[in-house]
Length: 169
Image (tube, rainbow, N blue to C red; front, side):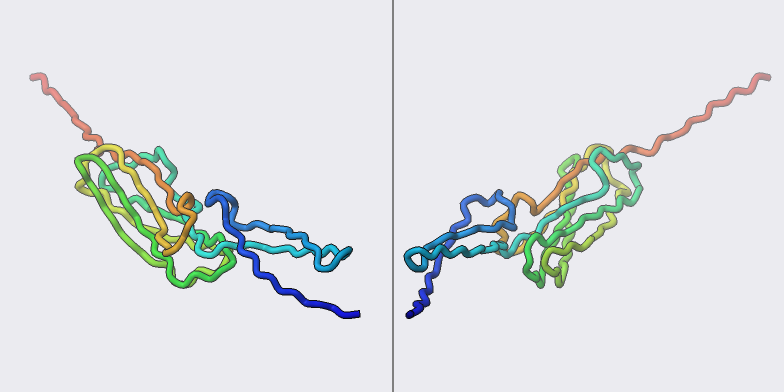
């Protein structure tokens, strides 16, 4: 009895960028009349890093002059090691205020996460609502829907206490 080994390359096109990264495909084929073969292909798309959590929570309030501690968790959603993951902080506010800072995570193993933090000083700013955004910028990451998170916070002017006195004479 002769056995034949046939090799076939199958190209799988990822139909939707919003599908979960980890998927399993089962392919059935007949290798010989009467012999059903089954192959399970686990697909883990490379280059999918994003921001999974962010602090402070939206709606938080701070006094002008406070230092706001901003934290984010950068998640590697694949099984692949990522050597350099750029992370950016963007803040916008009243009167065209903008602030930008960058950082880089070097060495993020597959399916792990790493916390990153920023301290933002608010002294001298205008009272109002500020939008804080943390984003990853990994090259060739097709899953852009998980690359950033944003929150809004409010900065208030420190209250001034006036004391009036009167002296009757």
